[in-house]
Image (cartoon, rainbow, N blue to C red; front, side, top):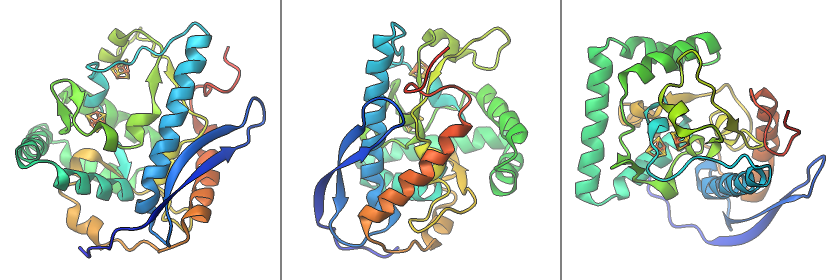
Length: 270
Ligand code: SF4
Ligand code: SF4
């Protein structure tokens, strides 16, 4: 992989005007020189975190507080899908961990892959994310089968995320207002889970955006990131002006939110 010189940074405030309510403002750091989409991920994460913080406040105000808390980790056993840019970022994060931490994570990747193999799920999962990523029924089947294996995310350390500041966008996108116990039986009849969604699908959009334009979603299971490392490293991303790139991305991400299966917290709730 080519090493890039560190980029100079600058702080700006992103303002998003909304059809109702106050405009959303989030301070972010952006590279001060042309960059790749991966280089503006810290800004996208900062926006995701600001949405989360706003969601927590909004739901508390509605007397339906978010029930997610540190050490509550059932959600870290789901089939986590992420885009290629995020996959590369995750591998970079892994390489920066202290050696003993890195070894534990690598061992968990290996153990998780062995569990998939033993359950004969690897070929189906591979086919789903390469050829059927838009097939919601198939994705649903894979989500259920993966959940039944109860494979902890390789980054889970004693019930907490070991890379919290660097965790993928999808892990910043959901919050629950239902009791945490519901998250332990997500596919059982009678379980009701109430999600709080932000008004932008940042994770979904990041899986289908190369910095210049939208493309077909290229998502992969988090557990496959190490396996796909050489493939991911071959991807070429355009080098572009960061601010217009972020603006294009947010416009694209806004289109995804209409697909949410629950009203976002800044829309009328039933
Ligand atoms: S309530 Fe559910 S989604 Fe929230 S942290 Fe706990 S297990 Fe995860
Ligand atoms: S990256 Fe962190 S938050 Fe996301 S699934 Fe893994 S342990 Fe959980």
